[in-house]
Length: 78
Image (cartoon, rainbow, N blue to C red; front, side):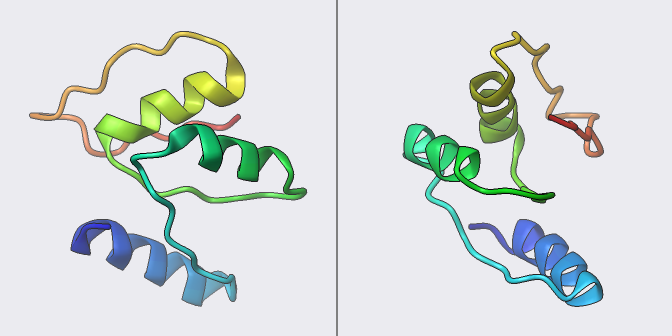
């Protein structure tokens, strides 16, 4: 729950009139299951230490690591 993440999520949620909720990155298994019960499009805003893990859990496909020093715009569509 970092300021930059919250600011990104807030801007998109306000623009698209979406509900905003914060997930616990320490329990990705629970969050993954919550996502799998949802229908429709879902935007998840995260960091390099959680995004790749979440995508792997949702898609069962290994992802290449995010370069924290130079990559700030990776988008996954699962």
